[in-house]
Amino acid sequence: MASSGTFFTETLATWDDWCRLFTSKEAFGPLSDAIYEREGLPPAPLESCTPGTNAVFKKGAYVVKIFIPNTGELRFTTDFGKELSALRRAEAAGVRTARPLAWGEMADKYTFPYMIMEWVPGPEAGMVFARLTPAGKARWVAEMKENLRRINTPARSDGGEFLRKQSRENERWKAFRPNVRREIRRRVESMDYSDMVYVHGDLTNDNVLVTPEGLCILDFADSCAAPAYYEYPPLLLSLFQADPEMFRLFAAGYPGGEGEVLEDLYSGILIHDFGGGILRDCYRQACGKEAYEQESLRGMLETVGGMLTQTS
Image (cartoon, rainbow, N blue to C red; front, side, top):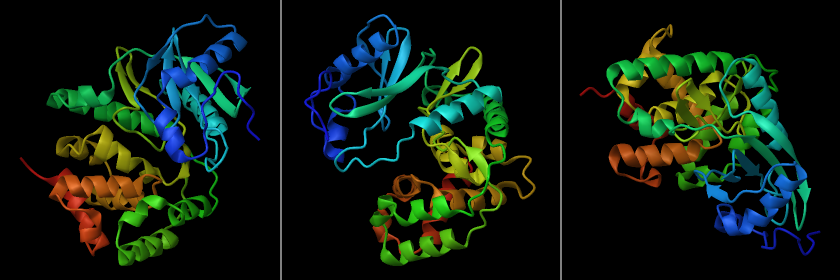
């Protein structure tokens, strides 16, 4: 049961409450001060960071991430422990990340898991990748492929139980026609989940920084065990901004070439937690139509894939 709250005084009962408050420096300022005091860190004002799902702020020389509490309808499977494990695993593999410095839970009006990480200066990749030269595209695609090689190490398979359940319960697919949702269900249920690896799960253009030392990968909160192509929807369509040349560079070296990577991208969209939103938004971007206007799942996927294979 929620108490009156010493540091966090707002009410969190619904997702609308969280969406209204999770970027608020006023709401999270006193709580972050208490966390810093507990961890022996000097006080500092909060500064806004790019919004994600949890409450993330720059605070002095560090970043503080305050996770969604389990309360009211916010029955969120906390990604605190998962992110910490994934960060440690990536760091041990030689992936540049924001190193975690302290973590724990703060019991206040609600119990907030939190993590404090180093602040990594550098622009988000989306700003840099939008103006790359051909040589720059080749450099960063090669570096991302190497990072994936380090991140996507073998993981124990649960036979796809988690991914199937995630797809069945995913509200994002409700924007699609019933026959399309049935086809998605059929495809997801019949996929092969024997070859599983650890994935980052959200390699978007604001979760990768460009630093003098190379790419720095942030926010492992969506890490899970999945087929390697689970990485492809955010990687190819957000981080690489559906750029055909970056797609060709990425597909180079795959036995089946671009066709193999496209088919894997389509499968990745169907099992990804954000797949419904990615397909809806990219389909709209590609043809100006809404998802519910299209009766063919394959038609939508190929329309999105066409963004990657178009020639200038």
